[in-house]
Amino acid sequence: MNKKYKLILKIAGIILIIILGALFFKEYAVKAHSPEETVVYQDESLELEVFYNRPSKKEREIFGGLVPYGEVWRTGANEATTFLTNEELLVDGSVLKAGKYTLWTIPMEDSWKVIFNSQMYPWGIDLDGKAYRDPQFDVLILEAPTLKLKDTLEQFSIYFEKYNELVFLKIAWDTTKIEVPIKTKKEAQSALLLSN
Image (cartoon, rainbow, N blue to C red; front, side):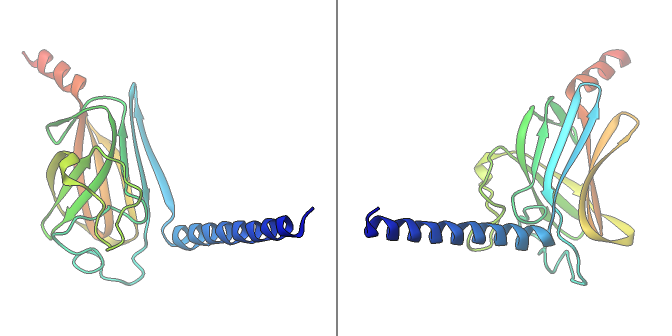
């Protein structure tokens, strides 16, 4: 083989090793501190799924500090948090069609805005550190009151809990929690028919 081609192959091999090493380092360094989590809720035909990354408190002031009040937050770390539903829902009384959404929040002291956005984004923030969300693709915005946790929650958490006829999407970290009530649209219509 020609010396020129051997040199090109060596350079290509070195570049490939550098790229793979950088990707591995990025994955390890970023994900080790804020691991990925997928939360699934299933009940009869309903399937809900949230994918997010879980940063830790690490003795930091979270809301009003690390996560500023009044600014759009990617609701976790790393990639934008996603919310998937296989059925049309009533989220706090407003219709959300079946599909996949990015989930954004605007934390405030007494309440949070919760935003379902129809676009998927390459990451949770842009190069300037601002949320990647494009507001023109917001399909639902609602406001939920903040609740005080009695114990500090070290790692950011999103989970589902069912009470009676409602499923609650719960978002909690540090000493703050919000709850978003969810009901399938068909369950709401059935209940309305039964009450008439």
